[in-house]
Image 1 (cartoon, rainbow, N blue to C red):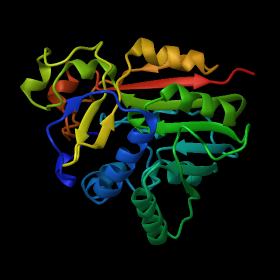
Image 2: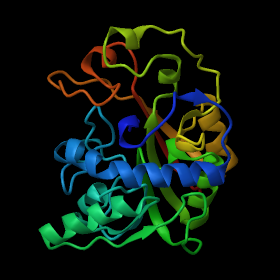
Image 3: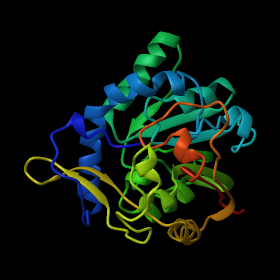
Image 4: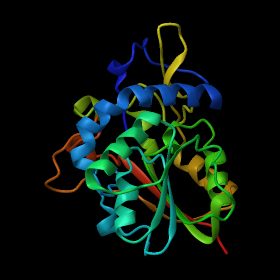
Length: 274
């Protein structure tokens, strides 16, 4: 959910245009190199078979944003180590997890082996989903793929294609307002001014040769609504989780201090009418 620049040799971050192929190539390599550290640092918080939507700790067991899942075919986009998909499977759903990173999917297989469970997974780019039309009843993504693609509208259009009429898609991303503040869990992270909410140039970390090594794209709230509507989906609900009392675990730029003042996550609940 945040960059770990020390996992690869990178130059000073910049803001510049990066197209879909370069974004995909960069983020596949970054997540392959960072996944071991990511799972070691955050695996306990996420659980081996838990569904946590965001660093604020919103749990699907309580939120029930997907509704009844038993007997439903579910696609998880950007599944990482499959924690959410495994939780859904335990509740009777038929789940397929998809991720860009092969190393993340290896962690899913590792957890499966330890639990004697089985979550079907596929390695693919979310902009081109390798599934037939109308294959799924539900789709979800907890900070998976959407912040890291150059064409979120293409992802949403693909989700609509693979959903059955009446199906739902719920996804969480960094709250767009955070783009205007430094990614710092301390007081500095409450001071705007380094960039603007309306600056849509991607955040880019480059390798020693100047090639993108990590790319995160920014969309305003209005952009997200436009992408959702443009894909033929209906936005039913936008959730901005508050930082809960007693939750003192910082995650990158997410922290109790910032969470008391700024929304850190936006969760979009959409459906394919029909």
